[in-house]
Length: 504
Image 1: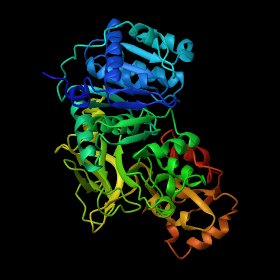
Image 2 (image 1 turned 30 degrees about the horizontal axis):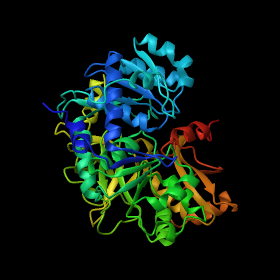
Image 3 (image 1 turned 180 degrees about the horizontal axis):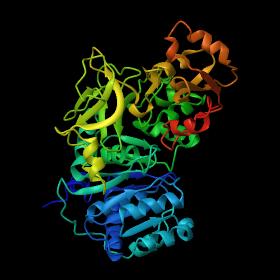
Image 4 (image 1 turned 30 degrees about the vertical axis):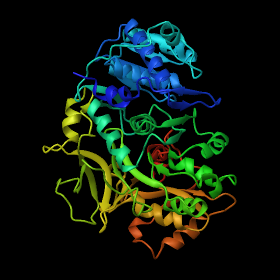
């Protein structure tokens, strides 16, 4: 039995002298050299006692060696568990305790904090720094450059990704070889990736976007990556002339638009810009096209499913939408209470089914059962509608739905109106407890640079545009919205901050 994911991604490149990774220092790593690096790392994993099915938990900086550790885990039949580099030791303690890894790999600076956590879980601890040094590298350096790939089938687990956990303890989404491979196959076709592509990779690789979408898709196509440690505007501007494509989050594009060096001449040669992980404002979409002549391709995915939908490569990339379901993905809009499928145009919860959908939550059988329908559809928790042309419009999260005085209010509808107001850069709308209405609408508004906005003026502008029950009862002017590392607004933090607005 072959190793489904490893064989598809890398066996085709064995012995290839084509460049795979272009490093910030100007040097490059060929496919052949990278495979040798991954093989040495796989031997190191085995030396640490890692066996097929064991978890390898990592909290490390982005580097070629970090990517090789992912591939080595897959080749050795282990389950790769990347953890956000921003997580604190107390958060890491939960993940390690829950996942029960055989090996934990961390930055050398984190050893003192994580040693007792690894020891308590019975896991070995190794280090890997952003420059590629560390005890794991030391263990790997004299190992063989070939490794007997462990057989793993399509339904075997390749990785865990923990959800963001904004409404409780994070859940470990179990992703199989087929989950990851089927999605990469779809994206290579949908986004026209080939061996001629050079992807500017500035995303983190502890998240599905940077690792399973960007790296897997590009590798399957046989292209190369400009491997930046993160989004640093100078480095991105410097490297864009050498790239053909870029995957980003909305923040990448707003920062580029704020830089006068980002011109049409700089990116005329580019083939594709995609955006995801957080909603892309329609204004950003329009401004980007006006500046560059390129229309950003927005798509929709999540931890549990990777990519579900995409705007078309050929055809209209419609601002404010996430396009159509990808081939092989079934998508429907259902009433969150009755589970009945809703007519076109009505707002409901997105449910999806396909080879991309995860196997379930680690050690949470009841939660897994709760999130799946009897016919196999996964309940995403995202609210959306489908327009008359079939484009999917994300409205928000079901948990963000505001019920005020018995009326349903979708935050996205209010946010779009707020964002249209003069001097407003962006906004976030939440529901907070209210003694009379149950919940009240509260908005956090970020002014544009150099602009002053007034609560009364905004409320006056909304007066005739939406029903009174949808209008914010209070508007807070804030310097910025709280976001996670992928650019998603953390509304739970806004609820914590403004949740007592109407308390006695």
